[in-house]
Length: 183
Image (cartoon, rainbow, N blue to C red; front, side, top):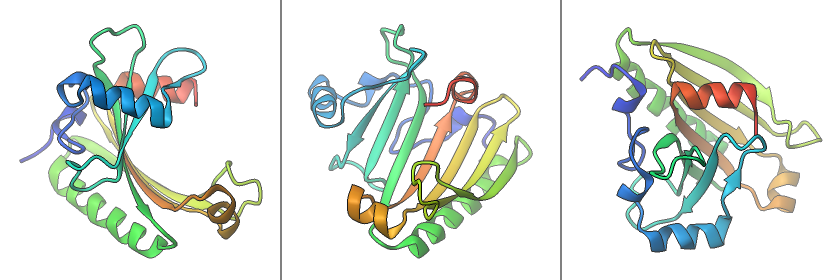
């Protein structure tokens, strides 16, 4: 199978363009809101909610869904899968490379790969936390991002963070929103 567009990819059975409530019950939605609250982007262009540690998840520990607040159908414009690695950046990196290789086999010539290399996390003011970011940008404007974050010892201890793999599916519209209005 050759994937033509971002909507050909899934995270825990969900694709961009799907409706949120086709995958989650109202009860799961309310529990997720209590646990992590709905993130509302500062310009009001999207909302996000993290659904964490559901028994049906096979790969990821959590999935963040994003939609436009004016959309009463909650059509997903972004989906991010999170996998946590407690003090184990090496295995985070290995899984990242496996996912990248799998995607490369599926995309053919319909997307190009952009490896941004190592970047320092702006969240950690010490400069000791860093991440690697690889992106696949489709002709249609959609994007897949695969990021592996290595949190510093201080952040792990003070914030209780773990090294994290993030796989993000973004529509063209969501990619544009993020590039113009970061979190």
